[in-house]
Length: 227
Image (cartoon, rainbow, N blue to C red; front, side, top):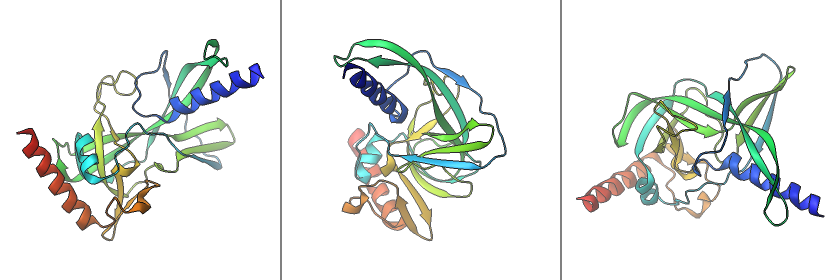
């Protein structure tokens, strides 16, 4: 039983570190380049835990450093980060460590329109997941159902957090991440689609016009409150 609990605690530790995008730095990280190979692909999906619980446009605006309408210019580039993780016993005491590797991907966007913030013409957006190479025979796509990998040509309205200077992901470059799944709207034919699984409660708009209207009101309100 003790061994089972220790393994369970390890799995929980791995899951939390893998999917929390804003919980801080991880000890002893090592970034490794990802080899490019031509091989059959596998796709593995999961759900992520997000620190932000923003559920409305005003909430998203309040947590964003930048709000843009942007198009995916280049396919995501995956970084494999290797780290040392603890194995805990049933009392939460570390009893051993294991080495685990996690994929993170950076996608280059070209900015079409800005709603808030000082905006460059192009920007990089990070997400958990990416393309890994488990063997010489396959390429595996690791994706989260509420934050799937971006694809070239797709257009989005993005509510972004500036993580430039982060010691793990962006020590010497400019980098952003989405506030949450609710802060990523794919745009096509006037429809704005969020990947947030709880969006069925109608807290978020589903058209570009309504989304932009709510952004404009919320940004104006935030500016007035700051004055």
